[in-house]
Amino acid sequence: MSEASVAVHADPDLLAQAVAVRLVVKLLDAQADRGEASVVLTGGRIAAAVYRAVGALPARDAVDWSRVDVWWGDERFLPAGHPDRNETQARAALLDALPLDPARVHPMPPSDGPAGDDPEAAAAGYAADLAAAAGPGALVPHFDVLMLGVGEDGHVASVFPGHPLSGGTGPVSTVRDSPKPPPTRLTLTLPAISTAEEVWLVASGADKSRAVGMALAGTAPAPLPAAGVHGVRRTLWLLDRAAAAEVPPRLPR
Image (cartoon, rainbow, N blue to C red; front, side, top):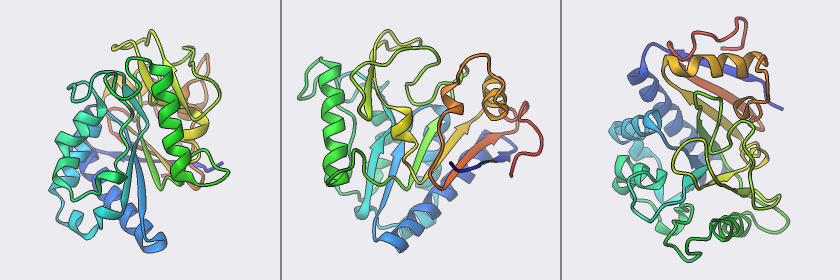
């Protein structure tokens, strides 16, 4: 398991810009090493700010976007194009402006997709897509970097503390009666998330500070999903100063 390290930035704008630079560099490094790159996206306000910041970087054009695979860590089970879908947010903030290969963009199914309004079937379909991209004997493909937001309660993706997942033991599960609306979601499981080469947990705001602090210190009264994920090579917490207010001292920076 990789050791967690923390990078703290003064405010949300600087955080978004710093994460954007890291992301472009990570994709360039992956393409230099492997000829291609793979990223797993998240949703939320800070994620949208990161995507807009990537779009504003001149260095974004150094990435060969036609050789980038785009996946999602979770999704609200809503119709395609719904403004609350993470896919819709990412496309509006960045993806629609990039020369991506459409065949390498892998959104989680919407509620009006081929699986219809059956979220378990949709989760199984996304798991099949992951397995097909992974090749023989693997459940998920190589993820160079997987980005996560952190909820006030310590949830990541759509894995909430103490809230059950359904859909079997595969890499994708269904969430019903979610503690946050909308009630039905699809999510990668914590083991699937932790297959990524690097996992980045991005949090902004004082309302995240308690969950961030407990996750990093291991002091939560019950298991926190944010404390249960890690990258194979690197686990990186990217925070603004407000979110980092309760980070324990002496963590690697």
